[in-house]
Each structure stands twice: as C-alpha cells, then as structure tokens.
Image 1: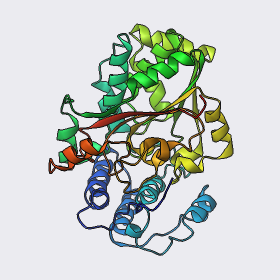
Image 2: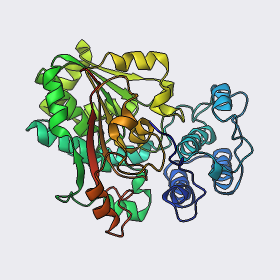
Image 3: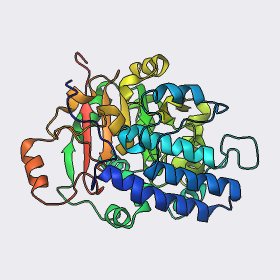
Length: 378
C-alpha cells in the first residue's frame, strides 16, 4: 500500500481539521465547564489546554501521569512543536487525554473517575427509544450504520448538528458491501465476531441490537464488543456506557437476551489501552492482533475507527479499500458515516459526482459506506 498521500494536519487554513481545533474544541470546553461544577483548578487547567492547543506548542504529560512514558515515546518528534504540525489523529487523541488530565479523571481526589462527558451521554440516552431489536437483518445493519450519526462530538457545532439529523437520501450510501457482509457471516456461521464500538447512546443501542441478531440467529457463536478504556472523543463508548445501554433496553426482549448473553459469555466486552492511543490499527499490539486474528469477522464502527483502519491521510477517494485495510488480521467490515476528510474505495464516477456538488461531502455526516475486505484464501 503506497503511503505517499499526505498525512492530515490541523494547520491548513480553512481545513476541516483546523476547524475541529479552533471551533469545535473551544465550544466543547465551554460545554464541559457548564455541565459539571468543576473547581478553580480544573477550570484553569481546561483554559490552559484550550490556549495551548489553539496557539501554543505541545507539552508532554507530567512525569507522575500513569502513561507519561507511553506518550513521551509516541510524541518523541513532536514535543515543543506547534499543535498544528502534529498529525491530526495524534493531536486529537492527545487533546482528549489532556482534557482528562485537566479534569482530574486519573488523579486521586473527588473528580477521579468522573466522565466529563457523562451529562451529555446521559441526556442523549434518556431520549432514545427503549424498544426494538427485532426486524430484518438489512434494517438492523442500516440502523447500526446510520446510528453513527449520533456522535456528540460531531454535533458540538451547529452545522454538524443540523446536517447529522437529516434523513438518508437514496444516494447517501456511497458503497454498499452489505450483501458481502451477510454472505461472510453465513459462510462462517457460529464463529467469533468482533465489534469495535464507536459511540455510546443512540449509536450503541442499534449496535447491540445487531449483536443480538447475530447471536440469536447463530451467525455468531460469540461476540466480542470492544470499547474504550476511558472517556474519549466525547461520546465514545466505555463499559459504563454499555451497562447504561443494556439497562435502557431492560423492558424490551432484546435487553433480557443481551444480559443473558453477557452472563453466559457469548457476549463479552473487552478493552485495551491501545484504543485510546494515537496510533493506526496497523500498529496493533501483538495481543490485540492475535484476538482479531481469531475472528471470523471484525466489524469496525464509525469515523475514528475508519481513520485508524485505513490511515488518516488525504487518500485519493478511488484508493482501494482492500489495499488500505488489507493489513488487518481478520476479514473486516467498516460501517461509517463520513465525518472527516478520509475516504477510500469509491469509484471514479461517484467521486466526480460528489466533487461536482460543491459541498463538503466528506465531512457532513450525510453520506456513508459499508465496506468489506475478505482475507485472501478465505
């Protein structure tokens, strides 16, 4: 896979990545400060983070941070340089790690373990439907796919909030490998299916419904659901969010089935520090790589996981998905709505049509892809 496509950075005027740091993040910090009664120390630390990340240079974590050594190594060529010169994926990840540091999430004290995005997640989940879970497989897959629009970080800005809520047009699904996904599940029925989750709440609910379908129909003998080990990118799902979602479904049959699946081990929830590392999936640690290698299929949800799967670069849209994702150790399916500049696997006609619209089609959340790559010989 050639890597001559430019790495995305946030120092390009007028770019989506720059808007994330200079428009989305300031609004996010304002909302975090409004949502929880942080004291003067936490408030000052958040303000310093905002000033540093929008006009300062990258400073490493304090030496007493539990992951100081890891971040020191990950940023070995970046410390002291402007934030905008770091790869966008790296800089975003570090911003959220620093936000947790500023709010005291890891430090002993009253705020230790308090999710700074918890009020946003709880408010969204409270308004989500508590039923469902049954229906044709195509509908369940579509609900999981388009549920990726329920991204609280994306909806921080007014433009994202409006566009993300719009319905899916007939031409909004740019690549539909759904039939290939179901065919692979039928071919490997009863095997392990891994699901790498993205957002909590309104996205996680249809993800759980899809998982329930795979288990109850025998398409998966076991499902491993991977979540973040700590709050990340506003609404990324953690174990706490999985428990809240299952509890939200308690009155529906699907909720009871999911609880029993967790009890008997056919649905296991896993995590790993790597899921909050600023690295692509190409750099999976050996343990995680071995886990995924044992899967009949891995379903990768959402925009951030897509960026980590194919590489956060300005790829030509016609770049082969197989070429970009072929490093992954199992058959992999990406379910993603487009909310950043990265896209591969489109044909030339679709690319020309979208470019001709004069819109920011890569970043509005209006379009989506279902893309599958099977391992050679499978």
